[in-house]
Image (tube, rainbow, N blue to C red; front, side, top):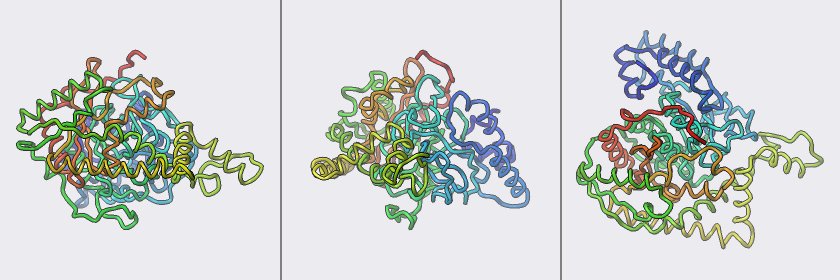
Length: 491
């Protein structure tokens, strides 16, 4: 038995039946990291020794008394989520040596369950990018083909789960940064409703769009991790105080009568033919399962991308103002005066993509352009929300591709920012409207690369999309039929 192939709920069963110990599980993942990290490059910081030490202590406790159902299960955490006493770098030179003095709320919740942190996972610098090529430290590779990107910005999290280096992981999603890498790596990625999960301790990119969420091997694990990380937090003013739910109870394996809307704009120009074909097969599967499918027009896709990049860059410009070489973070070694210190620290500390977005954001917020760009984008945001509200009066779920393409070659888009930005076309509107969205694998293309399907739900209706995803997953059994090969395909 390969322990690292098991889902978290399967690991729980083995622990309960005393077929495995927490140490066995943790050691299996530590060994797997040592075997695969050189190829995949998913981690910025590994905590193998600390993890094994914790697992040993937990085993002693398990012998002497009751422990929680998640006690001793390992996890990986994206490197923009603060972890006390461990580096939180955001994959940037700016925070290369920053050790967080506190835990993010989600990390506190994991610690309360005695979940073991295996390390911090690579990402695009400050979560800005769609390929994990913009990390200061390394380029993460896709376990299905090591010459392809894993997606981004949570590429390290998705690649680590796909490569069985962690059983599950936390990512963050600002415009698709959980769902798109989940699609590229053939795993499940859930972006919760804005406000459902506390953002306290998440290093901000765009505060009105960012949301922490799970990346897992299957939908059941996604529901379990969501159970752990949700809940109102007074330290986050955007955190919503809603009734705590058990999302695993929503997984009924039944979609009879479920009304699914398919927006035709998401299947038009720019969508790869093989992606479109697999999505059409998925739609037929839902029909067989008894769901009601209807095509409709959601005429916001063409506005969403421009709206997203104006709002996201404006908020990034504001949020990254604190990294100035004075308070914390990278400081230039040589400078003439205070102004020169600011300029050099930020020029040397930030990478090209981050600087590009800061400049764009500062421009749209500047005097004379604020009304023309930022204010207009916020008005369009309201229109996007209204369009979704209208759609959800008729449909329970909206079905789209997660990404217009499968994973692309490393280096093929990193020199063309506009082409990289266009890859977010299917996901950004979900963040603009603050809705939940999940990506589940729906097949592979002719070269064996995974294709993701996105299911979008109404606000705080995670149960609906989780059940729709779970029912589909049970039918097609993707994990049983397809596995990453770690091949080195043609560049």
